[in-house]
Structure formats: C-alpha cells, structure tokens
Image (cartoon, rainbow, N blue to C red; front, side):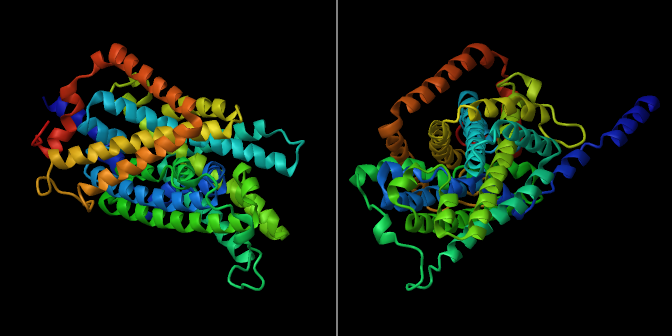
Amino acid sequence: MEARINIQETETRKNPPEASHSQRRVLGPLHVWALGVGIVLVGEFMGWNLTIKQGGSLAALIGLWTMGMMYIGQVMMVSEMSAVMPEAGGQYTMAKYLLGPLAAFNVGLMLVFEYAMLEAGDVIVVGQLLNALNPAIDPLPFNILTLLVLAFINYRGAQATLTLNFVITAIAFACVVLLLMSTNFFDPNATLLDLKALTDGLPYGYLGVMAGIGYSCWFFLGIEGTAMAADECRSPNRAIPLGAIVGLATLLIGGTITWFVCSGLIPAGALGESVYPLYEAALATGKLFVAVALFVGSILACLASANGCINDSSHAWAALSRDTLLPDLFAKEHPRYGSHYRAIIFLLPISLAFAMTGLLDQVVTFSIFSALMVYLLTCIMMLRFRKMYPLGTIRRGFIAPLMPFLPLLVAVIVLIGLFGLHLNYGINLISGAVFYLLASIWFLKRRAKFIDKDRFLAAGLTKWGRPKEL
C-alpha cells in the first residue's frame, strides 16, 4: 500500500493535474482583441467590395452597419454562453450542450470551413499582391512557406500566436488610418476624395441592398471566434466580452473609414471588381509612401487573419475529435506547448488546396455561407440556453440584453444575408447545403454509434446541474 502511494505521489509530481491547465490560462483582453480583429481586419483590405459589385456604393454602407448590429448581437450572445461553458470550443461547445451531437458536429464542421476558407482567401490575396508588384513572381512558394511558418507558430501555442497577432494587427490598422489622413479629408478645399462623382448609390434598388448585405459579413467575419479562447483566458468572464466588444468597435470604425476612402478614390465599377481595394486606393492618392504602407499593411492583414484562422479551425477540429464526433486522432495536445498540433497539421493542406484554385469570390462565398449557418444556429442555442437555464439558476459572467428580441433580430438579418447570397451564388449555397447534408448522413451512419451521451454531456451536468428542460 505504501509503495502504491509513493508511485502515485511520483506521478503527481511529474504531471500535476492543474499545472498544465493553469499554464494555458495566459490570455487577457488584448489577446482576445488580437484574435478577433486579427482574423477580421483582412476583410477591410479585400472581399468587402464585392458588396458594391452586388448592390452599389450605398448598399455597402448600409450592409456594413446592418451587419455591425448583427455581430454586436452575436458577440453578446456568445459572450454569455461561452463564459459558462465547461470547456473551450466556442459555438461548437454551445451546440454540444444545448442542441446535441448532430448539431454539434455540423457547427464544428461549419466553423472549420469558415476559417479554412478565410485562410485560403488570405493566401489568394497575397498571391495577387505579389503579382501586382512584379508579374514575374511566382506566389506559390511564398504562399506555402507563409502557411508553414504560421502553422509552426500555432504549433508553439496560443500565447505566441496571439501576441504576434496583436503586433501585426495594430500595424495593419495604423495603415488604414494613415490612408485616411493622406486624403486630407478634413480640408474640403484640398481633399483627394470625391464621393459625389465616384459612387453610384443604389443601382439595383432595395434588392441590391439585400444582395450586398451577405457580403458585408466580410467586414466582421470571424470576430465570434474570440469564444474559442475562453479556456486559455485568465479571466474569461472579463476577457471574452471586453476583447470582443472593443474588437467590434475597432472593426466598425475601420470599416467605415475603408468604405469612405475607397469610395472617394476609386470609381464604383472598378472598386467592385478589385482584389485589393485598399492598396488600389493608396495608389490613387499618388503618394509613394502611402502605397508602400498599404502594400505592407495588406500583407500583414492577410498574415494576421491566416494566423488566427489556423488557431480557431484547429480548436474546432480538435473539439470534434475530443468528443469522438471524429476519430480521436486529432484530440491530442502537444505535451510541451499545449497546442492542437495534429489538427493544425491535418487542416493545413486543405486550406492550401483551396487557395491554389485562385477563385476568391467562390472561397469567400463558401466561408460566408458557413458562418451565416453558424450564426443562425447560435440564435437557436441562445433561446434554448435561457429556457434550460433561466437567469438566477447558474452564475453568469455576462448577461446578454434584450431577450428574446436580440436573437430574433439577429436571425432575421442572417436570413436576409442568406437570401442575398442566393441571388447571385445560388449554386454555391445549394452545393454547400448538400455538402453539410451528406456530412450529417455520414455522421449518423458511421460516427453516432460511438458516442456515449452520458459522457458527452457529463461536464455540463456536473457544472450546471440538470436543466429545467433537457
């Protein structure tokens, strides 16, 4: 008996149960801000201008602020739910405890493809920028090397990943402000901006507004991924809502500046077709130092976004594997860094393969479709969460206001966005829906039998107790 106790004490000294977990709780609000804004800021450097192509200049501005309201609601709902979840995983974990295994599998898969497609879009833009600099440059080796370096940084753990994101995101945002100042917008007699001559209003009417709203997601797509970091925050109840709300404010300001400057420097027709609108706006100023700064800023924004996407997609893939919704091969964490290194390595070639297609609008559309489906399910989860655990039954670090109006409003905006995407990319949406349907059939036929539902929900029941409705 004494020998057995000594063995157990030795093992405890080697692997203290709380040590590895406490070592991972190293993130604060700035890291959460860097994760959210770092993933999304690239949406101001490219992609958002597809809104102008679909609905016109005013549709882009209306869509920016409409989707801004939708994301404020998303962040509030996710902040309330993520802060009390028994484990990390963002909306996947919420679906797991609130909607069950099939919904959790789909949400996890949608999150993976949302971020994997966004990462692919980043790489496509980097390649286009390099070609703009010198058509003789082959971007493929650079793209592969960039993704390998970012994957290695994520391999080393979340703190290194998000510290890097904070630095390069801050520099990229400063470039947006520099472009604004270079236009002399504050002096009506010397400004370079001419909104009256270059914008085209609403050429397709209110139907164009609906068509454009879906692409306005690109200003904010991925900010809800801040919930993925809950398990690694020192104080998730404070860090998640604070970092996400400040991040949203940053993106709203940056998005408005981006629309204002680009619409005042580039004709609407050319702006809607551009691959890198902010860089082209910088070229339109005729100032070399501004063009150089925005070229560098565009590259950095793409790097920050791809970096954060690798972090979030690997979290979602590992969460699926951990709960046996996928084979448990990908759930293992690195013994030293605590990263989901197997998930990182597995997902890397998938993103690279989509990036090599060069089809930016197709990649963007699939990423937005996956995100909007997650947002719609999040509204359902929030209503169910409040029904299962009413206020006062469990401790909450943050309480979303305006219930139940908030999730209903968000759901209406999401449905408008899906309808708008359908107007121009209906085949893409049908293909995406078929993909998730086939994945669900595979899950029900091949994986559902491996799930022990008591173990699947055990952590939530232990932490919260049995809900009023389960």
